[in-house]
Length: 329
Image (cartoon, rainbow, N blue to C red):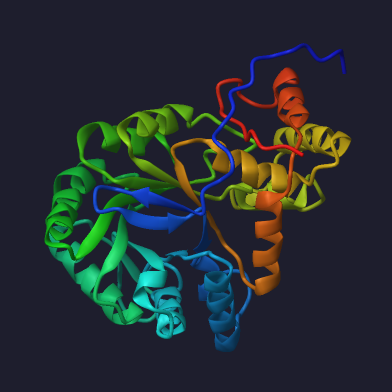
């Protein structure tokens, strides 16, 4: 490695606010949210009592934003989350769910973005959740249904937003290009983008920067790129739901080496970098137990020296246009 040359570092606001506002309705989300896929036994079977304990602990620790979807376990995540939140005052949590996948039977899903399907999906989600309203509704993975999502699903949700049935409208996707098109053509409040703005890749900066200008909130899922930024480049590390390819393993090893030189955990750098962009309202993290909640909160708030970000940029491991955290020891 050659000598590190000074580079201009764009600093993000600090410290992180505990709650950020989304949309004209002022929906409030905590800086860290709980992703609901694991609640549907996505990674391992989770006893019902552990789910209730996890939700209570999140609320106690200030994590008041919960993200779920009918697709997660064909409604299991919504049912479990709804039961666990029954004892929590409605003013103490914010909930997001999604439309676009209709449940048919116990283990079957049908993709539909029609008006009738949107209305029926929300009605069924409200029943599973045991709620009278939903704070955030995302159009779920409309990758092959751009026009129907924009011309049918969005207007349907906009009607419900105007009636106060829902608070904010978004789209949840594993890409950033289509959300950018949505943002340019309709009055979206937010987007949930999974795995496309992380310490490992920042190609989605055009979306985040545009949303920052327009006041559209970004929720980031998959900030560990489905594993490798939490585990490091170990054997069996996963990237985008698959075993990490050699080029990704090599790049993560380079990032890890910089983190080690500054005595910073890779997962802490991953979380804090993702949260630093001003458009980002919340990090949606899939957590299964209270120990993972503690680990994530500690990593999010651990002091990181500015020199780490400087070195990542000098080594061209980080896009020079991406904001970085400004707090340091």
